[in-house]
Amino acid sequence: MNELVFFINKVIISGAVIGSIYAMGAIGVTLIYSILRFSHFAHADFMTLGAFMTFVLTTMFPHAGPAIGLPTAFVMMPVAMVICSAVAVGVDKTFYKPLRMHNVKPIVLVMASIGVTLMLQGLIRLFAGTGSRNLYIDDSKEIFRLSLPFDLSSRQITITEPQLLLFLVVIVAVVSLHLFLTRTRLGKAMRAMSDNPDLARVSGINTNAVVAITWVIAACLTTAAGTLLSLDVALKPDLSFLILLPIFSATIVGGVGHPYGAVAGGFVVGFTETLAVFNWGVLFRPLNEHLPEWAQLPTKLAFVPTEYKITIPFFILVAILIWRPTGLFKGKVL
Image 1: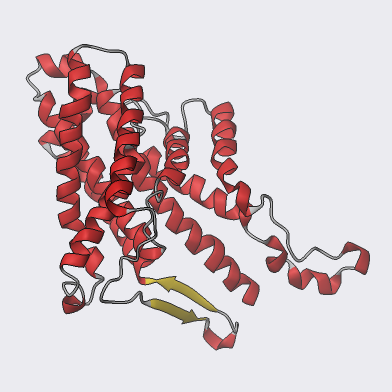
Image 2 (image 1 turned 180 degrees about the horizontal axis):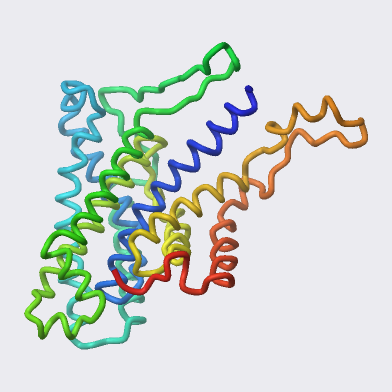
């Protein structure tokens, strides 16, 4: 059973963690595409920006978390969401809205988002440096270890506090977004604008408010993803740049413009990555006792070396697009 516990720790839990991060990033990308009709390449940098906002707030109020039994960074995260939302709306009004007013083609907006990416990365490195940071200032990360019943395994299932918080936040975010899009007036306005922007405008829908709330939702999700990922590993200036491509892959795999597809795509990409780099030699090790010497399985048996992990999202992307060109959920509008 030790091999099974190893599989749970390295594939089930790790895949769910990275899938949750991809899903929250992909939801923001697909919402922006649905409303504004362009691929926002600066999206991942808002994830880093939000995490650094949380870090600054955590250093200012290091005792806020232990007082209520939660990590301080998690307590400060809602404040960072508000700040990051204001920055996102400001970036839209400064860089993207003037271009939209001139009816430029989507490729121009995409190029502008790449410019915003470079600008944000430069600003983050200018003020925060290039080193790694720990979001635990005056507290420490809790690690929970669960033993299997009846002493079936000497290994323990291991899960950290940030991982549990991440799963909780993803569930709350997906349910809240579903209720917002289907039950509220503003959510229905977003769906109408996603379906036909011109018709929504002549119908009296406040399109400026819809655009603003889109940026707010995207910024809140990226801040949560960046903060919880940094809590679990470490905060680095290139934290989210490395997962930009998997996030876009998850968006396309799920179906561009479909938020539920973005969630599915995130978990498909996340679990496929972990399965591809998992050492299957550990799981199949007990079989060696029953195999002849010439047929012994190697101790290290993975589909892809860890250093080539970045190729997995592209493989999934190509495979899904050949099988289903519109993505898993036939994405187009909300």
